[in-house]
Image (cartoon, rainbow, N blue to C red; front, side, top):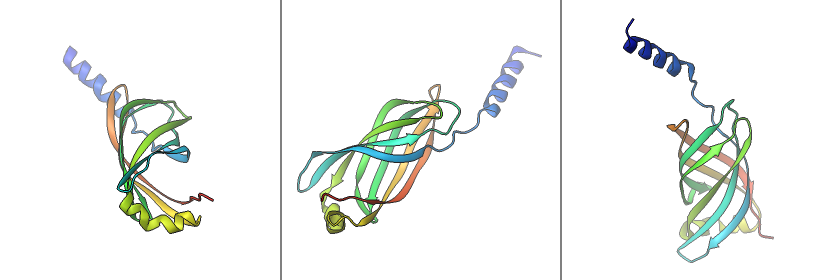
Length: 149
């Protein structure tokens, strides 16, 4: 056997032994803050708490999501930094959402009255290990109650 054949077999066995990572599990959010407020656009930040169900640590490279409330676009969030994710543990993902205020006024009454709204996040994230990243879909939908009273 040549060295090239041996290296090819080793690479093939390494690729086959690697399983694709399980999806990260959303737990809750915390530290909600209004960064800027305006009539046309605003910015909010919050920490999303996730759980990594994998037996190995991961790296999160990029997040690009759209956030909807009751199927109305609330805003867009992008994160392009390297975050280390521990194995079988929770971690925090700090995000900043640029809010389109024209769309938020559609949901203002139900939100102010503390009624339950449907929050949806749709987009993509890149996760990986050893600087090899794959793109995974983000597709979260849940009922939440936001009240200022």
